[in-house]
Image 1 (cartoon, one colour):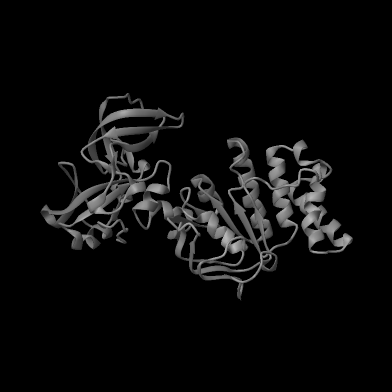
Image 2: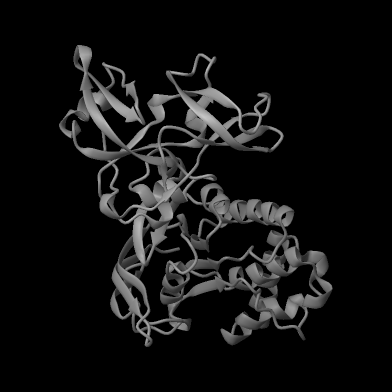
Length: 384
């Protein structure tokens, strides 16, 4: 096992494409870290730089106490599982597992011992004599993981390993990977664009956009306290509703935010509202998760707003309610600042499946203001 660190790492390809810029990340020994971000954000490139398959244009990569920039992939003692399995089709599962050990010139006894232990760990005992074409997608993925595990690497890298599997199988293999990492206690980096994988697998999750680290935290912190508007919109399905507002001082020394023409008072004794006083009269953004909305007649509603329902997605256990109101949500994927903000017409609320709401209906929605987040004009979260 080993610690991993990226120190001011940048990568510019020959055609001028910037894949990473001043990237810094510290991963603890034995930690499971997920790199997540939109397609083209640089997450796979960073993984390949760590593996030695790409060379950093600038910066340092450390595994343990060693600077590994000049080391070959073989010298780094890392193992990588790819999206396309990369199994040898003419070899049985056993031969695929044996191959990296033969390259390491281990004895036949050691090879046999490692292969059998790995096969047992992954439930491959009955499949060792089959070739890849005789295996299901999930079984091939297990063999691909086994070929990495059998090397007993210091760092275990996975680059979107489940993207070729169907939804049900992804859930199964995802659970197996999490359990496997806990048993092995090996430092693991896992790249995905799938938020569910990121939020359910990682001890910590690193959110990346345009080659830069946006936030590194445990999954619940990312969800409840996003560092900026990009993270707020990217994490969560659907993402956070973020809208432009203004903070005003109202009667009885209270603060309120504007929701269209409506003023929504914040709790007077709320520590967050007290810390916001310096932003009175300044433009800022507010954010509410879809689950911060509720039925107006419930005890959870701290205030109410009028909305017009545009569409309803019934998911059985819950409804996703897309609505128009007095505010317009930001397009968080394309946010560039207060002076250059893209918008989207609808906001979204998540309500229990027991409610009965129809398209084009005008209703009152409750808000749970304790879950509100605030962002400055440049999109950075206000830590209040």
